[in-house]
Length: 117
Image 1 (tube, rainbow, N blue to C red):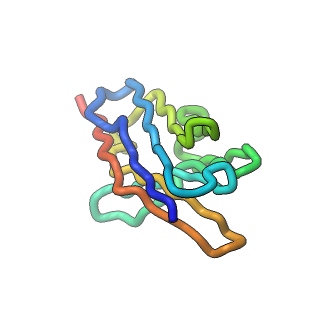
Image 2: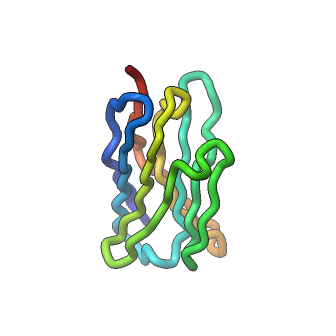
Image 3: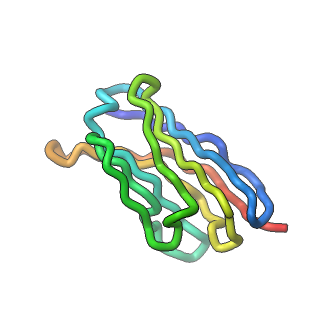
């Protein structure tokens, strides 16, 4: 069992930055692929960025060059650094943990990010 707690969301002006954190507890964090998803009102939940257990990263085209995902296995935490934020980045951001070989996956409760002037 893995518990995920996100933090760092809030209101920011266009062009600003935020860093989201997701603290994990309850299992072997380093074995999990970690990801951030987001869901805007009335839209589906979409993948934003992923960092594998081996440290490889991948991003949605819409955030490439602006967002950076990273993990600190010593702190059981995954981060999403978001720069040059746009109004269309407004959404609830969810942390996701997956250990595919065992069919395990977990979601955090979400944190709101609002980009507005």
